[in-house]
Image 1 (cartoon, rainbow, N blue to C red):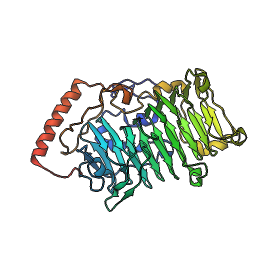
Image 2 (cartoon, one colour; image 1 turned 90 degrees about the vertical axis):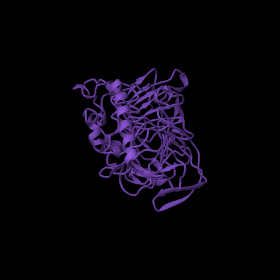
Image 3 (cartoon, rainbow, N blue to C red; image 1 turned 180 degrees about the vertical axis):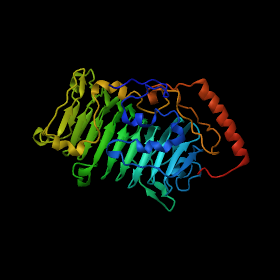
Image 4 (cartoon, rainbow, N blue to C red; image 1 turned 30 degrees about the horizontal axis):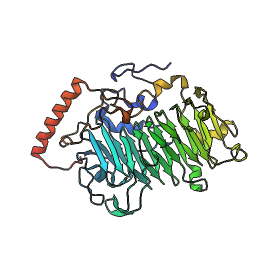
Amino acid sequence: MLSYTTNDQSSSTCLTGNPIDDCWRCDPNWQLNRQRLADCAIGFGQYALGGKGGRYYVVTDSSDHDSVNPTPGTLRYAVIQSEPLWIVFATNMLIELKQELIFNSYKTLDGRGANVHIIGGGCITLQYINNVIIHNIHIHHCYQAGETNIRSSPTHYGWRTKSDGDGISIFGARDIWIDHCSLSHCKDGLIDAVMGSTGITISNNYFSHHNEVMLLGHSDDYLPDTGMQVTIAFNIFGQKLIQRMPRCRRGYIHVVNNDFTMWEMYAIGGSGNPTINSQGNRYIAPYNHNAKEVTKRVDSSEEKWRGWNWRSEGDILVNGAYFVASGQGLEVKYEKAYSVEPKSAAYIDQLILNAGVLGSRHNNVGKWAGNGTGADFDSNSGVFEDYDEYSGCQRAYSDYSIHLTFLTTLFISLFLHGTANSVLF
């Protein structure tokens, strides 16, 4: 029997049945071993190492003035480095990108303990790289940018054409894990994975206010996407979403224990014969009688799609929602689209209780505390802290967290007065 969680993570009842959160959140001292998070991934992206084993890099500067020669202390400077890095944030930040933020391999973006928003041009690009973890970051209001030089490593920069304006663009990349992020209001997709990308887990995220939410697969005819494997687990597909949760072209997609709330057109769509394994989800249909169907075969005749393997197993269908299955129900047909054991959909409220950016609904956010490394609090700190539209909730503060902020600020000021060492340690 699954137990119900409380906001007190030191409580013996903190277990939720969500295997990712239960792996690390019940440890009251988790912030002393942040890199343990890399051992908690599930699904097809479970082998994503991120920056595990590497040094910590503390982002101390929210600016993004130069995409070719980024300033040490900025996020852009961190993500292009060749070495594995576990990237954390000295304080709350609004990072307004001028251009795509192009990652190098073996990086973890760990926003726990800070309220970090990434907006602007680009935004995040994972192109022909591997082993990236993005955790606990607000990503929204991303627009097209480009037609300029952008650095992608310490030794290379090059001309970039105009980007699509995705929140996160995964392009020919593998071993990627996106967890506990809140995404909304982008020009194109919130998350797109194309051009042979695979080994991806998208978990515990909160999606809202967007049209084309997620695209998996470049085109119906792009054969390298045939082997794509993506796990979509424990996410909330929330307010004012229209379609593509996801929209799949080829590949093997495991949609497990998510909460889909009142899409406007459809929830899960596809073309090009993808295999879609839907297990233990809750689908709440909109009031529009013409949009009750969960599924949509895009630009495909029934004669073509009736052989595609799409199944619904253990899903809860609410308010007239219905899932049109196709293909064969044989278990062997879904082996490549099975990545984690599904929980009963009866526990969905418990499993997705903490979806989205942590700290937005709870006090115990684990402020970053390093070994004598930090910077002044950013002038943009807290701009969106209490703005419900972006996180789906308000962030609560305790007297303890305010006291900790004061002590941290004092410590940082004293430290900066005496040293100007690197932000790496």
